Amino acid sequence: MTKPRTNMHRILFVCHGNICRSPMAEFVMKHLVERAGLSEQFHIASAATSTEELGNEVYPPARRKLSEHGISCKGKTARQMTRRDYDEYDLLIGMDDWNIRNMERIAGGDPEGKIHKLMSFTDRPADVADPWYTGDFERTWQDVLAGCTALLAYINNRYARAKSDA
Image (tube, rainbow, N blue to C red; front, side):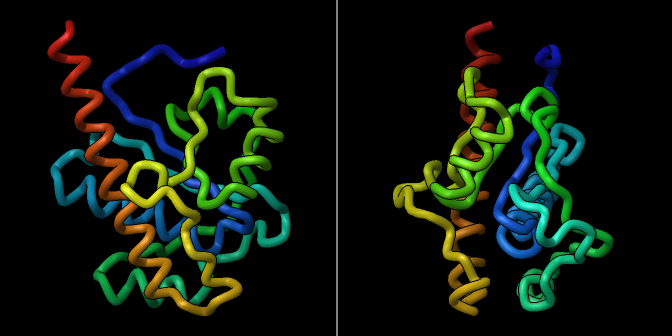
């Protein structure tokens, strides 16, 4: 059963292991909403589609990249997405097509249209670069920042439209 709608925006970012891309997106988004003075309107978290990294902290190069921009991810450990997350969150945001397929499998489908790829909110709807394979955490940072910035604008626009229609 889906939770009743409130002014709280609940977002779950998801990648394969929940140690690089999805925690980067979680903490970048938290940073953006804090800077916009909207923290109390958001609940933001991240999770994995796999069990490979459960309980592990954010991968050190990802932690360093966030730190370069004044963003802390202290205390974050990997957890796996569950079917219940689909009901608990308004948006479930994957980093690539493989994540999206696995998220839909875990959730048992996407009947409410909540599952999206992060970069689909930008003008370049590609996958978020995976630094686990490339080692290029700067490129991942750029993708995550662009995606989260566009996602926040999307949410603000959608919320403003809903208020004006009321």
